[in-house]
Amino acid sequence: MVFEYAPAPESAAIVDIRPSYGLFIGGEFGDGHGEPFKSVNPSDETVLAEIACADEADVDRAVKAARTAFDTVWGPMPGAERAKYLYRIARIVQERSRELAVLESIDNGKPIRESRDVDVPLAAAHFFYYAGWADKLAYAGFGPDPRPVGVAGQVIPWNFPLLMLAWKIAPALACGNTVVLKPAETTPLTALLFADICRQADLPPGVVNIVTGAGATGRTLVEHPGVDKVAFTGSTDVGRQIARSVAGTAKRLTLELGGKAANIVFADAALDQAVEGIVNGIFFNQGHVCCAGSRLLVQESVAGDVLDRLKTRMATLRVGDPLDKNTDVGAVNSAAQLQKIQELAQAGEDEGAERWSPPCELPPQGFWFAPTVFTNVAQSHRIAQEEIFGPVLSVLTFRTPEEAVTKANNTPYGLSAGIWTEKGSRILWTAQRLRAGVVWANTFNKFDPASPFGGYKESGFGREGGRHGLEAYLDA
Ligand code: NAD
Ligand code: MN
Image (cartoon, rainbow, N blue to C red; front, side, top):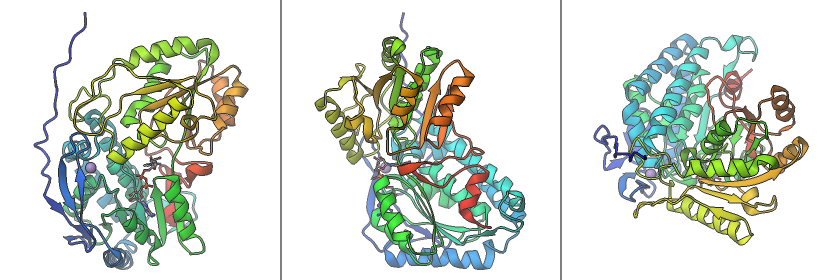
């Protein structure tokens, strides 16, 4: 007997979305002087709000506000005092967590279950964690008296809007830097709500500035001569442009770019658990995850079995309304991203891989893509090489551990990887040989503020999170 799910919608009444938003500079919301743009709800394509766009003069004002705050208040403030503000921000993020989660799901399309249970709690955890470091920087291993770098220019993507903001802002502030942050143009709303949280926390004006806009605003920010440190998360293409523009300047740079992670399942693995890990690895957040386990490498002797179990499990995934608490897979963030996913999936078919999706009804409005798995994938296929950034899994097989490692490392990226096996010695053998910044064993997509995260090769450089994450924001 199968029980049907009743709808379980989270109420949107808790959020108050204003018709238009300005820039947050020097502690005040004000007009932008670029062409305003709109953020939509990707699950139904309704316009949510009009957002100000920062032009060069606006970015310049924001950087100057950050400089003034750095020189006069935040830089000189003892770490123990800065910590109090970070704790306060963490507590307010918790207090307003429902509002933040609903707003994130509305603006981004991700399921409320994920924004409520992952994005927002982890964002708060980052502020708590780095608050704890603010008065202990002399003991962090970066010299007896490490100093802040100055003004940080930070540009973030749309896949984890509030969480990426927390990854960027919390360590920067803990170390005594001030920031100008640009959220992604399709998901600016939680960053603007965070600006309100900064005011609520009485954070001194200019310590956090939020400038909205698209790529041009981001470029203006990272190229601004008053920025001492650039932190970017996003595509490898834009990361390259930024590396070029920063080269030859005194600016510090960290880049967190794309990935094409291998999720390796050995024949001795607990297969049902592995299937849960595969599903979490690629369908979490609609696959809009830089460290997604988008290449499944499964040992040949269990490949059929794993595929059968995976398909059975995929048939239970519920795709639809992001605000429904039963939803597993929400909306794709934008029309442009949907088009990119569709194009790569088509390339998979054209190159001869076999495509499968469970029967699932997609809503008529909005941007949707059914969970998809490709078998008979060759290493040369585009779907095995390029980051799809969507709910699309490419399955390859291997016979020996050596072959698994060779195939796993056969990518220009190196952000993450997963290993599934009963044997601890095999985990260690494999992990040592994988060229990836994060290697999960018998789990996937686990995050903790105490644990560093970052890439090898074209996935970027620098670490965020943990003690390591302080380094980018300190001058030893
Ligand atoms: P993107 O790199 O274009 O955008 C990321 C951020 O950079 C946004 O805020 C954007 O406005 C800004 N930006 C764009 N051009 C810029 C420039 N020249 N200088 C400075 N900032 C600039 O990424 P996207 O278009 O949102 O997504 C494209 C692809 O990027 C995805 O399909 C995926 O492959 C990858 N991606 C990776 C991550 C990650 O977490 N590593 C996140 C999002 C996207
Ligand atoms: Mn949006």
